[in-house]
Image 1 (tube, rainbow, N blue to C red):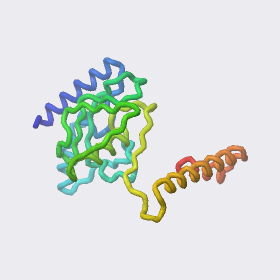
Image 2 (image 1 turned 135 degrees about the vertical axis):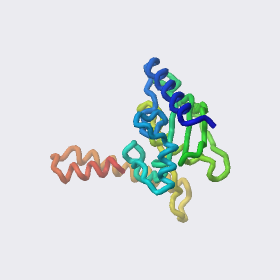
Image 3 (image 1 turned 180 degrees about the vertical axis):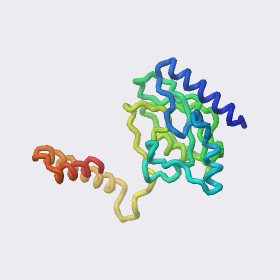
Image 4 (image 1 turned 60 degrees about the vertical axis):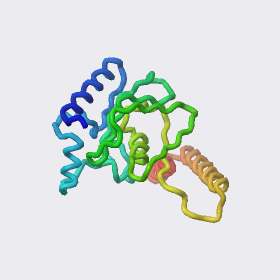
Length: 198
């Protein structure tokens, strides 16, 4: 396992290469290229000793992602900036100081379906959450959605559940259209914001 210093040097080199190519390097404050000298490994050790880590929501992760504070991700975008495929070189994923992936190439091609197999605790969900939180340098034109929970148990079939979501979406789109035609008052703006969030 490489030392923290070696990891920082490698991350800095990768960021410089990405900058030279005109690509966006990983800018997450959880990356291994820390200017303040505190590596994620040190932060994870502090967290285990009782110190608090940075809030994951401040780094683009959703508030529901409770593991974001202990996750550290680095990588360099390796595809054309307008590509629809995801290609990340030197992908490294740490979770509370434990190396789940080290210097790996991540390639997800548009239109393909992928399955992740592995024992519990090997990092499958952690990797998906890091990708969905855009902790990797993935361009904004690539849409990502992470469904990390199952639907509540009911007597409905899967098709009925999907249709119900589609009906709800149609209803919300109609409500948003009606709200945009009204005069913008604080109440209308608040409701429109709620509709767009859903």
